[in-house]
Length: 294
Image (cartoon, rainbow, N blue to C red):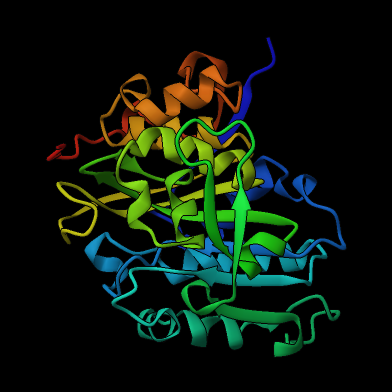
């Protein structure tokens, strides 16, 4: 039986940037993309809260993904998000420090000479302010059509860089649910949320998923109730990657309905016995996150 590979890195005693790159290297993440593809890196900035609250993605994790891709020869990279419409996502990028980190990232491919990477290869996009495209989702059960940001729709591949968080409606908010950032209005997802998460991923399943579990969030997805987990998770099987993320929060993957539905649709596996963990012992890293499921 071929097992899905999911990398798990304990970053308690190492630099988070190095931990992200190590996790991606251990699953040979560059194999999931072609050199000429436009790759959209999608973090979770649902609010403008700082990553220390557990609500938003650590900018160094995003930088680690971008640098890994760039150093693997991919140059057409976009970082894009559409968070809560109460906030300007580009301002959130600045507030959390992502804009400065990305634009100042050196290019280390030049024979050891550090030169600016240059903005000509890189864009930051607020998906909420992008042109919309109406998309019909084939074989959908609940979310049959949706308005999607054009940049999100037209990219060749998506890398989800989610946060390790519980969710009051969806049980967990990880890589599959992170695709909500590409649509408007967002509240259309909330009824029949599990089925609609699966429907959305029928068209927009990330090619690669990364979970920032350095500081996770318990109780509520925007509740700023942080838990230090010091872990990075990465995988090409998004369902499996989210299953590992759920387990690390003390939640059985079988309990997460959208993961169960996705597994039945053969979009990936949520069976931990069919997942090969590359790196750390997830049992030792598991914590019990408090929950307020509705």
